[in-house]
Length: 424
Ligand SMILES: Nc1ncnc2c1ncn2[C@@H]1O[C@H](COP(=O)(O)OP(=O)(O)OP(=O)(O)O)[C@@H](O)[C@H]1O
Ligand SMILES: [Mg+2]
Image 1 (tube, rainbow, N blue to C red):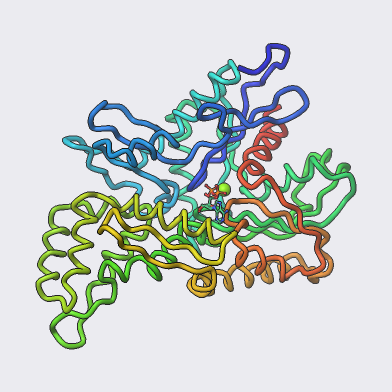
Image 2: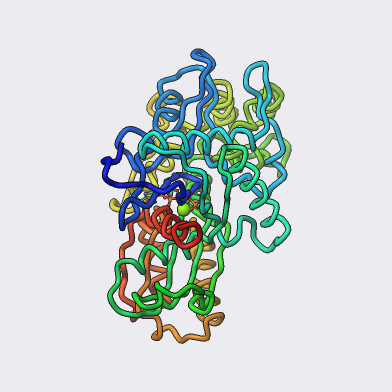
């Protein structure tokens, strides 16, 4: 618990992320991230329904229970279903079915309760982060996604809920660290979305009540680390399971959809259906290389989809510092490996990375600024650790100082600052 002399108000900032979540409160004159799992200040946004113990597990514990082979169902990247039709679909848990928005509510309720235990008081008011766009080019879907989150936050027990764009929150956090006024490009590249803001910030401006004039540009794309995982998986792992493999009928290939779903965190569970397994086995009989489809059948039968996706994510992260990495697929077949290299990864993600660079250019136009008028580029979100991503963004503002933000905490801390402005 926080030391007794620090009175924590009843408001907080909640960064419910595609991959990781944080919650921050105001403690004295500063904002602080609350421990959400043991001493860890982040909670992986994962839930595991344990069919043996009949209780949900969250975060690292959820992933560990799944990896240990406990019978149950793992769900990750839940935020990416917001704004899509999947949000109203049910997920099958043994004999019961529960809608995905109820699953997200369980995660938010857990974060709230854990933070409350840590700070020793009930948190009833929240500034909730949101990406600039949940869904590309669809304002109605964006509104539906925010409405879903609002309903979820209320159902989880928050009485007052306000929203703030995640990159603006990161900007408020960065602003609390600088001593002179500057124009900053904020780049928040997370697990599900990439968000950009260009802001005018500084100690004097921080005291102003109305900050609308200081926001020069805002934009975002539904591209994030989970897409990078998918592209790396399609490039390196899925061919070993029969992706784009020929069938006996001339000119026909295996259906793409299984592989896209298997490589997409939020869709893996859709494949764990007896009908899909039967279809894969049928297709194996018509395949030129049936062994590859037998591997896919093994993955579905033993529900290895998340374990595979974790191996791919691990490889992606390793390739941020190493040039080559062999992805271990021995869980599918003894001795099987998929070699990956930084160059192949960069090629596989070239298209989305170019779109990020184009979005920075678009933000400069929105702001009416030339690249050399940006003083600093503030990098936050786990995917800014990828060399190809950060290089592409920084190249658009070559003269700007590169500021390494707290990759996983900047948004949550900024949301708590915003909560103090709104509710304090
Ligand atoms: N060293 C690294 N190199 C490359 N990617 C990394 C590294 N560390 C973490 N990541 C990736 O960062 C992503 C998670 O980042 P982050 O926690 O900022 O996302 P998020 O806030 O949950 O998502 P979003 O804001 O999009 O909802 C994951 O895709 C993860 O694989
Ligand atoms: Mg984020």
